[in-house]
Amino acid sequence: GQQLNQSPQSMFIQEGEDVSMNCTSSSIFNTWLWYKQDPGEGPVLLIALYKAGELTSNGRLTAQFGITRKDSFLNISASIPSDVGIYFCAGHLQGTYKYIFGTGTRLKVLA
Amino acid sequence: TAGITQAPTSQILAAGRSMTLRCTQDMRHNAMYWYRQDLGLGLRLIHYSNTAGTTGKGEVPDGYSVSRANTDDFPLTLASAVPSQTSVYFCASSSSTGSKGYTFGSGTRLTVV
Image 1 (cartoon, rainbow over the protein chains, first blue to last red):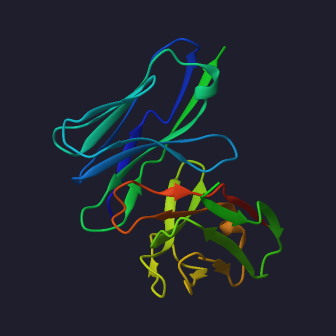
Image 2 (image 1 turned 60 degrees about the vertical axis):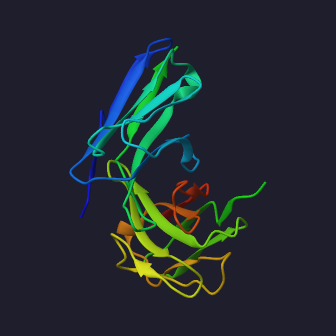
Protein backbone atom coordinates (compact mmCIF):
# COMPACT_ATOMS: atom_id res chain seq x y z
CA GLY A 1 0.00 0.00 0.00
CA GLN A 2 0.93 3.66 -0.10
CA GLN A 3 3.53 4.87 2.32
CA LEU A 4 4.72 8.21 3.51
CA ASN A 5 8.37 8.57 4.42
CA GLN A 6 8.69 11.18 7.14
CA SER A 7 12.04 12.50 8.29
CA PRO A 8 13.75 12.94 10.57
CA GLN A 9 12.34 10.39 13.00
CA SER A 10 13.37 12.51 15.97
CA MET A 11 15.04 15.84 16.68
CA PHE A 12 16.62 17.41 19.73
CA ILE A 13 17.04 21.15 19.33
CA GLN A 14 17.81 24.17 21.46
CA GLU A 15 15.08 26.67 22.27
CA GLY A 16 15.08 29.44 19.68
CA GLU A 17 16.35 27.28 16.83
CA ASP A 18 14.43 26.70 13.62
CA VAL A 19 13.13 23.23 12.74
CA SER A 20 12.47 21.60 9.39
CA MET A 21 10.86 18.24 8.67
CA ASN A 22 9.46 16.68 5.51
CA CYS A 23 7.37 13.92 4.01
CA THR A 24 7.80 12.17 0.70
CA SER A 25 5.74 9.58 -1.12
CA SER A 26 5.69 7.61 -4.33
CA SER A 27 2.00 8.46 -4.64
CA ILE A 28 0.37 11.71 -5.68
CA PHE A 29 -1.88 13.32 -3.09
CA ASN A 30 -4.39 16.09 -3.58
CA THR A 31 -4.20 17.32 0.02
CA TRP A 32 -1.43 17.38 2.58
CA LEU A 33 -2.06 17.89 6.28
CA TRP A 34 0.28 18.47 9.18
CA TYR A 35 -0.74 17.40 12.69
CA LYS A 36 0.83 17.81 16.11
CA GLN A 37 0.34 15.33 18.93
CA ASP A 38 1.02 16.47 22.50
CA PRO A 39 1.93 13.80 25.04
CA GLY A 40 -1.16 11.87 26.12
CA GLU A 41 -3.41 13.54 23.56
CA GLY A 42 -4.72 12.87 20.08
CA PRO A 43 -3.27 14.59 16.99
CA VAL A 44 -4.49 18.13 16.30
CA LEU A 45 -4.53 19.68 12.84
CA LEU A 46 -1.94 22.45 12.33
CA ILE A 47 -1.96 23.24 8.62
CA ALA A 48 -3.85 22.03 5.54
CA LEU A 49 -2.48 22.33 1.99
CA TYR A 50 -4.69 21.89 -1.06
CA LYS A 51 -2.72 23.02 -4.12
CA ALA A 52 0.63 22.04 -5.58
CA GLY A 53 3.16 24.72 -4.70
CA GLU A 54 0.96 26.20 -1.97
CA LEU A 55 2.81 27.79 0.93
CA THR A 56 0.78 28.34 4.11
CA SER A 57 1.69 29.80 7.48
CA ASN A 58 0.15 29.44 10.91
CA GLY A 59 2.03 31.63 13.36
CA ARG A 60 5.60 30.31 13.56
CA LEU A 61 4.72 27.32 11.39
CA THR A 62 5.08 27.26 7.61
CA ALA A 63 4.25 24.35 5.36
CA GLN A 64 4.49 23.81 1.61
CA PHE A 65 2.82 21.43 -0.82
CA GLY A 66 5.46 20.15 -3.25
CA ILE A 67 5.15 20.90 -6.95
CA THR A 68 5.13 17.19 -7.82
CA ARG A 69 2.34 16.63 -5.23
CA LYS A 70 4.45 13.84 -3.77
CA ASP A 71 6.04 15.75 -0.93
CA SER A 72 5.56 18.41 1.73
CA PHE A 73 7.66 20.13 4.36
CA LEU A 74 6.94 21.83 7.68
CA ASN A 75 9.14 24.52 9.21
CA ILE A 76 8.93 25.84 12.76
CA SER A 77 10.74 29.08 13.46
CA ALA A 78 12.20 30.14 16.81
CA SER A 79 11.17 26.98 18.65
CA ILE A 80 9.80 27.17 22.19
CA PRO A 81 9.38 24.44 24.84
CA SER A 82 5.68 23.92 24.04
CA ASP A 83 6.62 22.84 20.51
CA VAL A 84 7.56 19.48 22.02
CA GLY A 85 5.51 16.63 20.59
CA ILE A 86 5.13 14.36 17.61
CA TYR A 87 4.45 15.91 14.22
CA PHE A 88 2.62 13.85 11.59
CA CYS A 89 2.12 14.48 7.92
CA ALA A 90 -0.89 12.99 6.17
CA GLY A 91 -1.72 12.72 2.49
CA HIS A 92 -5.25 12.47 1.13
CA LEU A 93 -5.98 9.79 -1.43
CA GLN A 94 -8.03 11.33 -4.21
CA GLY A 95 -11.55 9.95 -4.48
CA THR A 96 -11.57 8.51 -0.95
CA TYR A 97 -12.04 9.73 2.60
CA LYS A 98 -8.73 8.22 3.56
CA TYR A 99 -5.53 9.81 4.66
CA ILE A 100 -2.20 8.04 4.80
CA PHE A 101 -0.13 9.08 7.82
CA GLY A 102 3.61 9.36 8.10
CA THR A 103 5.40 7.67 10.99
CA GLY A 104 5.93 10.98 12.77
CA THR A 105 8.80 13.25 13.79
CA ARG A 106 9.37 13.40 17.53
CA LEU A 107 10.56 16.88 18.53
CA LYS A 108 12.22 17.71 21.81
CA VAL A 109 13.20 21.27 22.69
CA LEU A 110 15.96 21.88 25.18
CA ALA A 111 15.58 25.07 27.18
CA THR B 1 -16.87 21.59 23.44
CA ALA B 2 -17.76 19.74 20.23
CA GLY B 3 -15.53 16.86 19.30
CA ILE B 4 -14.87 13.19 19.88
CA THR B 5 -15.16 11.39 23.21
CA GLN B 6 -13.35 8.12 23.78
CA ALA B 7 -13.77 5.80 26.75
CA PRO B 8 -12.12 4.45 28.73
CA THR B 9 -8.98 6.60 28.89
CA SER B 10 -6.91 3.56 29.77
CA GLN B 11 -7.44 -0.11 30.53
CA ILE B 12 -5.47 -3.16 31.58
CA LEU B 13 -7.02 -6.29 30.11
CA ALA B 14 -6.24 -9.96 30.63
CA ALA B 15 -5.39 -11.89 27.49
CA GLY B 16 -8.38 -13.78 26.14
CA ARG B 17 -10.90 -11.32 27.51
CA SER B 18 -13.12 -9.19 25.31
CA MET B 19 -13.45 -5.44 25.42
CA THR B 20 -15.26 -2.64 23.60
CA LEU B 21 -13.65 0.75 23.15
CA ARG B 22 -16.27 3.47 22.86
CA CYS B 23 -16.22 6.46 20.55
CA THR B 24 -18.84 9.18 20.21
CA GLN B 25 -18.78 12.33 18.08
CA ASP B 26 -21.15 15.30 18.11
CA MET B 27 -20.09 16.96 14.87
CA ARG B 28 -22.47 15.00 12.61
CA HIS B 29 -19.51 13.75 10.60
CA ASN B 30 -20.38 10.97 8.20
CA ALA B 31 -17.03 9.19 8.29
CA MET B 32 -15.35 7.65 11.33
CA TYR B 33 -12.10 5.74 11.82
CA TRP B 34 -10.17 3.68 14.33
CA TYR B 35 -6.37 3.86 14.40
CA ARG B 36 -3.77 2.25 16.60
CA GLN B 37 -0.53 4.02 17.39
CA ASP B 38 2.62 2.07 18.14
CA LEU B 39 6.12 3.40 18.63
CA GLY B 40 7.96 3.67 15.34
CA LEU B 41 4.93 2.64 13.29
CA GLY B 42 2.86 5.80 13.38
CA LEU B 43 -0.90 5.63 12.98
CA ARG B 44 -2.32 2.53 11.34
CA LEU B 45 -5.94 2.27 10.24
CA ILE B 46 -7.88 -0.62 11.77
CA HIS B 47 -11.44 -0.08 10.49
CA TYR B 48 -13.43 2.77 9.05
CA SER B 49 -17.01 3.73 8.30
CA ASN B 50 -18.00 6.06 5.47
CA THR B 51 -21.54 6.48 6.78
CA ALA B 52 -23.93 4.95 9.29
CA GLY B 53 -24.67 1.34 8.45
CA THR B 54 -21.43 0.69 6.54
CA THR B 55 -17.96 -0.34 7.67
CA GLY B 56 -14.72 -1.29 5.99
CA LYS B 57 -11.37 -2.87 6.81
CA GLY B 58 -8.26 -0.81 7.12
CA GLU B 59 -4.60 -1.76 7.17
CA VAL B 60 -4.62 -3.91 10.35
CA PRO B 61 -8.17 -5.23 10.92
CA ASP B 62 -7.45 -8.73 12.27
CA GLY B 63 -8.69 -9.30 15.82
CA TYR B 64 -10.98 -6.27 15.75
CA SER B 65 -14.59 -5.62 14.78
CA VAL B 66 -16.68 -2.46 14.52
CA SER B 67 -20.29 -1.45 14.07
CA ARG B 68 -21.95 1.79 13.01
CA ALA B 69 -25.57 1.72 14.07
CA ASN B 70 -25.91 5.51 13.97
CA THR B 71 -23.94 8.60 12.93
CA ASP B 72 -22.54 9.43 16.35
CA ASP B 73 -21.18 6.14 17.67
CA PHE B 74 -18.43 3.87 16.38
CA PRO B 75 -17.39 1.22 18.94
CA LEU B 76 -14.34 -1.00 18.45
CA THR B 77 -14.46 -4.53 19.88
CA LEU B 78 -11.64 -6.90 20.68
CA ALA B 79 -13.26 -10.33 20.89
CA SER B 80 -10.32 -12.12 22.50
CA ALA B 81 -7.46 -9.80 23.36
CA VAL B 82 -3.82 -10.75 22.77
CA PRO B 83 -0.66 -8.97 24.04
CA SER B 84 0.15 -7.67 20.53
CA GLN B 85 -2.99 -5.55 20.79
CA THR B 86 -1.33 -3.47 23.50
CA SER B 87 -1.39 -0.01 21.96
CA VAL B 88 -2.93 3.44 22.05
CA TYR B 89 -6.18 3.54 20.11
CA PHE B 90 -7.50 6.69 18.50
CA CYS B 91 -10.95 7.30 17.09
CA ALA B 92 -11.34 10.00 14.43
CA SER B 93 -14.05 11.48 12.27
CA SER B 94 -14.32 13.58 9.14
CA SER B 95 -16.81 15.17 6.81
CA SER B 96 -17.93 13.22 3.74
CA THR B 97 -15.16 14.57 1.55
CA GLY B 98 -12.44 14.43 4.18
CA SER B 99 -10.96 17.59 2.69
CA LYS B 100 -10.48 19.25 6.08
CA GLY B 101 -8.78 16.27 7.62
CA TYR B 102 -9.73 14.29 10.66
CA THR B 103 -10.72 15.27 14.19
CA PHE B 104 -9.18 12.88 16.70
CA GLY B 105 -10.22 11.79 20.16
CA SER B 106 -7.78 11.79 23.08
CA GLY B 107 -7.12 8.08 22.80
CA THR B 108 -7.48 4.89 24.84
CA ARG B 109 -4.31 3.32 26.19
CA LEU B 110 -4.82 -0.46 26.28
CA THR B 111 -2.46 -2.92 27.89
CA VAL B 112 -3.11 -6.63 27.35
CA VAL B 113 -1.35 -8.83 29.89
